[in-house]
Length: 283
Image 1: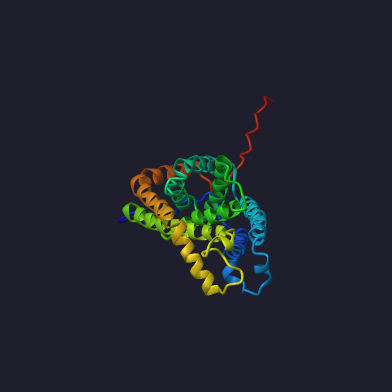
Image 2 (image 1 turned 90 degrees about the vertical axis):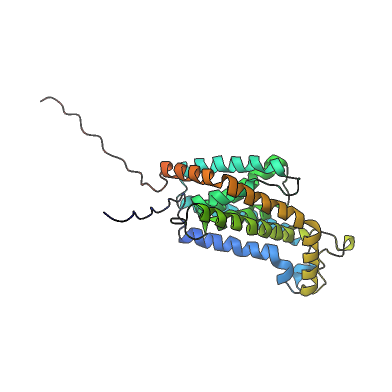
């Protein structure tokens, strides 16, 4: 007898293929440009001359690219059982968001996204995060040019949890601490990138912390840091704290439930059709 059995490979609802990875890289690259163009374009660039129009342009492009990524991942193996689980988790996440929205950033949906991405993998996580944010925007009436940026940022947030190390071996308290630490840092990262999306909409004349297309990159960076400190530090801290608390207190039973549902769904089991035996006829 062996001293112990080898850990089983964790099932994934979606296994990313080359096309899916390429689509994710493409949308992420465009997303980085969409979020960070104030620091990527020099002051004399033509993009800065259309500073009020650029967010709308990137928003439109991101909507199309997120749809392309979702379709590409679907082609790579998002079967009926995975779609059903996607619908359940997205509905749960969308229902959780309004519970704390508007109250110091207390948004419990982030904790669900972390655990779902951890169990179901990066491909499923990206689609889940994007669809959940889209559904919650429709539910709360938060539809606007910022929504595509929210969808992409939440897709990154959930996908990142699926990319954390040791999904087949790391269990118990160590896994919860890792997920809590990731949720804490990722909550601030989400808030920061969303600040980038909303910062450029501010009128320069209205505040000295707004984006100034004529200013240098260091000057705009200082303005952006002041904007984050003045507008969202407390909100992001509340989001991060709630994610940590919920992960440490409810993470174990929810991880167990998600893994049990994944095993029972048998996403990766091949579908086979057996030929029925011919009914023998009397001679």
